[in-house]
Image 1 (cartoon, one colour):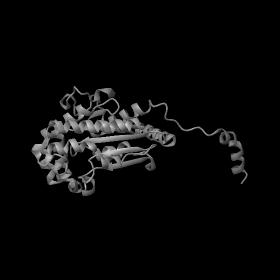
Image 2 (cartoon, one colour):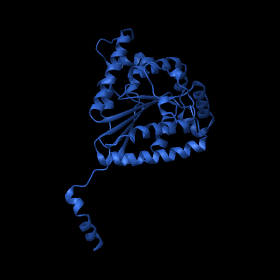
Image 3 (cartoon, one colour):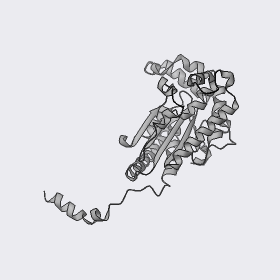
Image 4 (tube, one colour):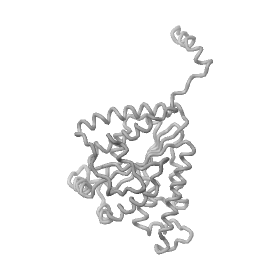
Length: 289
């Protein structure tokens, strides 16, 4: 599997990426391979937790029905819950709006030794607000009193703020992965129809989904701009083909595993000399109870 083919670069557009895997497996084979990869990820998580020097932040973005929730559930299924923290960012609350837009993301960051998963992320602030700039008026920003005050310089400023935010995290021990689940418009239609056709899936449907679907091209343009301006070596973007859910899960798991297993400095800590030298003594105490 050529994992690097999914890495975003400043000169690649979303249209350059497929919404189906470059090297697809059959559903059963993909599920079997995922089990192996997620077990290896769970083993790494245990070392990360014991080492307690680094944190991992995994960010997921994608259009509605792109499969973020199920992907997170499947890829991280074998993790110890005490070592992983998941946050899903919805419409900002009044409290969150009273702070700068990155505040709610700062306070949700994983501590050292932990995985943090952002289901929708700080990028909502250059995606949803890019398509619906009127939402920005709720932030009471200096110099922004009406939509006409929001120009290209404003978005470039936000890209710089996000890049600086991520650079600060990296400099302080957080390893960042960012995944865009690249769903085709045709497949989204199929998944929305499935929600309508299956009574047990009806609860997932919202009339707002259809309104947002009408803005598909605007969202793709916003994603293009955001990814191209923020795909940095220390905080890479990966564009994951999302039309096939089992393959999307496997590709994400394998990208994480490929990069994390290369971190040789994350190891189980050694016992101090005194404790290490008394192991037989401790065994004897327990055996003689």
